[in-house]
Length: 410
Image 1 (spheres, one colour):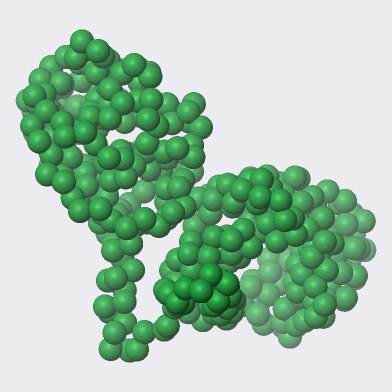
Image 2 (cartoon, rainbow, N blue to C red; image 1 turned 180 degrees about the horizontal axis):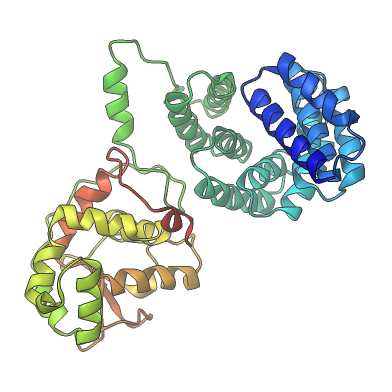
């Protein structure tokens, strides 16, 4: 029995590798051999049927794919991957049955809510099938969560742009498709989405009597570099707000009356020593002057930002780039720099920033505190403000090493 399991596992791994490289003529004999094994485990038979269904889906034989998937469901009725493939077969056939596909996507997302692809497909069809504005707004919020969970997946980006287009957010959908075309120019789905966006813009322009603006035209070969630089100047789609706003001219911060050394001198020695250890300083150099000098170093700040959770970096970017500061450089905690994020999650992000000395919270009497409440005032110190703005502007063009734990946190 153990010999059969080892043999079946080896054959299944080899067939999976061949299917991944689309060598179906070599994978099919192995899959048929696996189905002929008498004592093969149930999970092996289920995986074999799922691979056969994926082959049929790639060849356009959707009815045969559903037959294999139905047989796989007999072994495990709560298999989210099999349910998702059944939804794909209903969506991709010549006459799509989106209502049946939506039902299977919803079951797959319910069984495996941590998978961003299942969530994106479910919310995309939810935005396309339901006409309610409240339902579409909720679908867009969940699509943003799926995109933030896996922004490097072309399938998630496709469903994200398609859901935005169905919800009426044509400008945001065009922006996502433009970036996806640059990353995956070989995929025809994004080119088809761009044609739909151009058609939607044309209908909107005819309905309002306005000229058709911002229509995407592929750049010529000589203008490719200029187009890339123009796209890099756009804000990164990492913030909870989806509006691609125009970049405001940078304001020169005025003196706030609080230097970085004065703010750090109010810290307890334990917190100062913890921050010095994070900045890789020896314990004898855990002084406000040395820590303040190290915080103003761009290379040190880049390493510090790479260690922070993504949500905290987004909150810091919203504080530095998107929130309109007063002339002194302050912003109150009650203004919520990320309006689409829950207050509890935003408080957790602010706690991380306060602990790392990137943002300071001041009480009504001007004392430094580590609790960001409605009555406290947030302050980005004047020496850190331009350095942080430059680093956050370069975030989309400079590869910053991010640990795996930090990218999945929060």
